[in-house]
Image: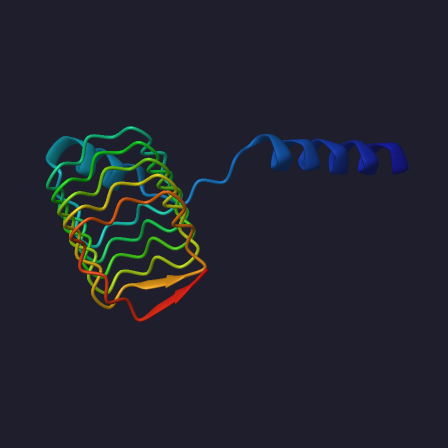
Length: 145
C-alpha cells in the first residue's frame, strides 16, 4: 500500500515539474500575432521573442513576465500595460507609447527607446543597462535602480 502511495506521489510530482505553467491566453496570443490588436489581452508569460509588433495596440494588456526579447514594438501603444518582470532585452521600442505602464522589474537591457513616451511609467527595479533614450519623454513615477 505504501509503495502505491509513493508511486502515485512520485508520478504526480514528476508531471508537476515536467509541465511548464503558462498563464497567457492562447487565443489572445494568436489575435495579437494575426491582427496586431490586443487591447486588454492576457499575454502574461507569453513567449513573444523576436515578434514583429509594429504599431500594435496593447493598451491595458497584461504582459507580466512575458518574453519580448528582440521584439519590434516600434510605435506600439502600451499605455497602461502591465509589463512587470517582462524580459525586453534588445527590444525595439522607438516611438512606443508606454504612458502609465507598469515596468516594475522589467529587463530593458540594450533596448532602443528613441522617442518613446514613458510619462507616469513605473520603472521600479527596472534594468536599464545600455538603453538608448534619445529624445525619450522620461517622466516616470519612480526610477529605482
